[in-house]
Length: 397
Image (tube, rainbow, N blue to C red; front, side):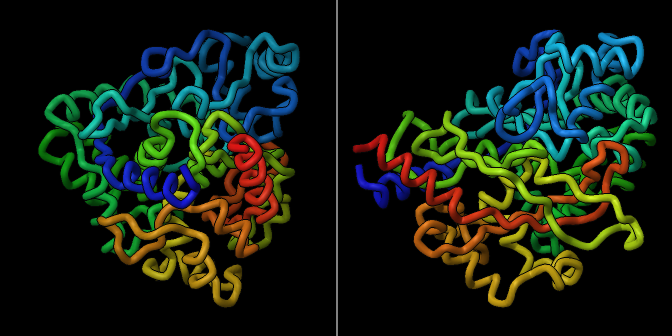
C-alpha cells in the first residue's frame, strides 16, 4: 500500500476513536509496572542509570514514595547502580508529562475507546496546584501531594466514574470553544469537567482542587490523543508516515511513525523557549522533556493557538512569521470535531516542506532543582522527520 493510501486509512482510524475517561487505576494494576521500575517520558535513555537531571530528581522522590530508599542519597545510588530501572512509559501505553515518572503506586487516568473498549491509554492523574512531580525538582512537599492523590483524590474520582465515563472529545470541544489550545491552556475543558463531576462528587476538598487547577484536563487529553494516534498503528507495520509520538527525555527528542510504531527515531534535544514565570530567573531550561507533544502531533496545542487568544498572546514573541500557514502544510486534514484545526502531523510533509513542527511544551529547570520555569514552544528539527521517512521507505523496499 502506498504512503498516501496508508495515511488515509490510518487517519480514518484516528477519527473513528471516541476517547472516554473510564477510570483511575494504580500503575501496577493498569499496566503491570513491576517493583523497582519507574516509567519516564520520551524515548529510552542511552544510559538509564544516568537520566537527565529533572527526571533523576523525580525518580529519587518516587523511590522515597515507594519506600525503596531511606533517603535521597540512597535513592540516587539505587538509580545509578540500576537497581531501580528507568523504562520508557510509552512502551507501557502510558504518556507522562514533563519530568514526571510513574511508579507502581502512581494513580493513572485510564482512557478507553467507546467503539473499541479494549483499546486504552493512560496518563498521570493530576494532584492540584503547587509543587508537582512533573516539574522535576526535589521539593519534598511533592510527596505529600502524591499521597493525597493516591489516597484521597483517586477514591473520590473512582466513585464518581463508577456512575459512568466522560466523553473527552465533548469536553475538549467545550474547552476549545472557551479559548483553550488544549495544551498550554486547558482552563475551559477543566471547568467543563468540574461542572459535570459536580453532581457525582460529595467532596469539598476535591472540588476545591479542581477549581484551583486549570490544567487538570491536560493529562486526560494527553491520554486521549495517545489513544487516537495509536489507532493509526492498528494491524502493524505499514507505509503510513503519520506521527504518533513526539516526545523528549531531557536529553533526546524522539518521534514514532504509524508505519513503524515500535521504532524511535531520535536526535539531540534543544530546550523549549517561551515566557518565564519570573523573568529574572536565569536557570537554564532543560532540553525537551515530556510526552505531551502527542497533543500537538494530533493537531492541537500549538496548532490551535490561532483560536486561543491568551496563550497566543503569551507566545507571540516566540512565534515565527507565517507560522499558522506553515504548520497547516505539515499536518493532514482536520478531525471532524475540530474542523478549524490542522489534523495529524505527517512526517513526509515535514520532510518535503522543511518546516519545523511546533509543540507547546513547558520549560523546566535543567538543574533538577528549579522546577517549572514557564510556558514553552518547541520546534522539532525537520531532519529528524526526514530520517524517519527514509528509514520507513527502506523497510518497505
